[in-house]
Length: 360
Image 1 (cartoon, rainbow, N blue to C red):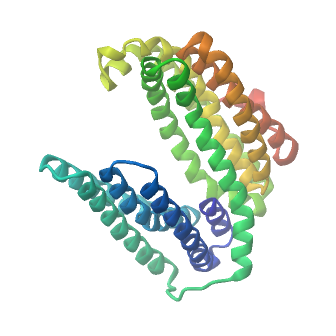
Image 2 (image 1 turned 135 degrees about the vertical axis):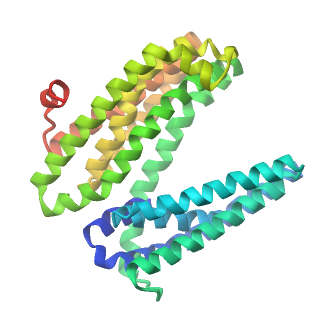
Image 3 (image 1 turned 180 degrees about the vertical axis):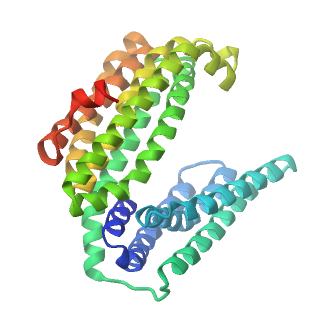
């Protein structure tokens, strides 16, 4: 939630980047302390095996660097200097993979592997803070109570929407595992991973567009609408070709990514791939609403879909198995899409449907 607010505000007022960053850092680290304590208590009394409890304790401490990394990434996106974060992240990811391979191949236990990953995260977070100081030219920690209160008020809506969205992405597996068995869950999950790979590639470009949209929204509404329509058109065209490619090579994709045991996922994938349309369009429409300070409408759309998802999965999965989850997921995200389209057309700008579809 704080990250979304940081990106939007920094894009509009780059001169206040350090003030926003340091205030959000103070607020977020306080909230992280509460989360860390909660995870430590849970891991101690949840009855997990000792190895899992020990790893959870280390990961709880790892929430601190993770928060700093997220806030730093949001700042770099807002400043339109995400290349600095991308380079540092690539180095950190390579170090994490190398350490994991080394520890696992040399017989180290789970605790050592997790501790090494958290150590890399602390180094990564420290490097990012130095980069922020270098970019902004400031180093004295600033805490503005008015900013902090404003951040908490606005970011709470983003956070609530994020929690519900996270729940939406887990409901399918929850219902499948309980009502259709692990076999159906595996077949569906394999197909979903292929769809999610496409979605990750396409939505990564949407995130970079956020600061541009936020800046134009206040400076030039006409430019904001023009750029937004182009972005929407680009997403639709990319999704169209991704669906065609998946339909043409669905069997090959499943066999390359998994093996012959998951061949049953091919039929599921050929229907689930149409989820890509709302899966990629909804983040972009949510971005239009957030850039226009209407993130509460995005929350309404996600909350409505979360309730609908429970009903749809509970109704369709017992009857149709993994295909029931396919149809429930497509309908759920289509509900978000329809509600977002209504709010964008009503409060932000009129979407030119014919031009976006017929004249890419």
